[in-house]
Amino acid sequence: MAKAKTAFFCQNCGTQYTKWQGKCSACNEWNSIVEEVISKEDSNQPTWQTSPSTNDRASQPQPLQHIAFKDERRIVTGDNELNRVLGGGIVPGSLILIGGEPGIGKSTLMLQLAVNLKTLKVLYVSGEESEQQIKMRAERMQMTSENCYVLTETSTQNIFKQIASLKPDLVIVDSIQTLHSQHIEATAGSISQVKNCASELMKYAKQTNTPVFLIGHITKDGAIAGPKILEHMVDTVLQFEGDRHLAYRILRTTKNRFGSTAELGIYEMLGQGLREVSNPSEILISQKDHDLSGIAIGATLEGNRPLLIEIQSLVSIANYGTPQRSSTGFDAKRLNMLLAVLEKRGGFRLGTQDVFLNIAGGLKVEDPAIDLAVCVSIISSMNEIPVPDHLCFAAEVGLGGEIRAVNRVENRISEAEKMGFKEIFISKFNAKAAAQKEGNITIRYFSKLDQVLAALMG
Image: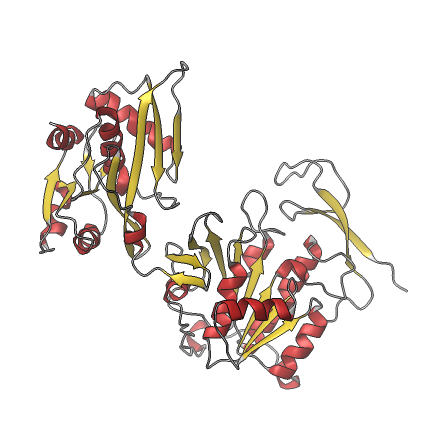
């Protein structure tokens, strides 16, 4: 009997070593390297076998101009948010990894996808739930489909046997960390098992042109659990985010070989499952009975989608010497920079004030076009002067206190007009692009931050 071959892997980043050491040289994590069995006798035999005609065909190099290209149509699902995030639909033969915190709704999202694709034969492989539990969730969502097949199995050998018999059009695996291969003696969820099982599923997806969805666990730092090579192997990496105590969920793309990585999908978690939010600006702007200081509306972009978001600020006197600067959903370093600009260029004494900033709705925004809204929100809270409800802002603020132009300002103006805003403040350097937009909204142009604050606060 052949001796089992072992190697040492870092459980944090997946780096392989020939011997044990206390610190991983790749991620600098201590005591994260463990020994795993990576192969045994007959481990070179693949678990996924294609048809003999496919195996007998040898691959040969061809000139690029001689390669025949067939424009395959994407699989358009009934979920418009998922279609947008994937770049227009599911690409045949793609391997898609979706990660998120426990209980965030990954399994619910994938089960809804499986049931909604009524014209396709979908195989839902679950290693975490029983068939009765999956049926219970489907009944709670009041959804059913004759083409959705459920398989509760963790062995890749048995899974591929059922795949060969069923021949599904789409496969969903929940989750990749529960699968194990008989050719690897390590436990399920280990580095070698995750890497080997993902490799087998990738080979199946590419050879049969069948799309495969993998649900993955995440670490305490928010990264996909398992080796980093797992994210390199797949075609698309989706991140399902949100607070489990709030109703809204955000689907982001961190990697996409077939589309943009800047797109965003928004869902609302209900008792009947996930509901698509087609107009997210409505939920990102809170409804209030009376005017409040420290609130300003900024126009941002997430991929091709314009959003109006609410920036909330609270400025108060620092009682403990060193003032606090805290931000949720906004870069803390950029907040400090804007505070320095307000103090230097605007003459506001913020060095003795605590400043707290929040992006309503749980969004994380990196678009510099909300700089002006952030500055207005802070000064509004400091002076206790509410910003009129009919105003919104779309401009970047420079270190010299200048109002800089932003891209695709016409889309931002259209979204503001659609949401019922009467006036929008932008940079005068966007005047040419904004002039092409005719509507019922008043566009005001500014070149300096102090001009904006004077127009608002007097």
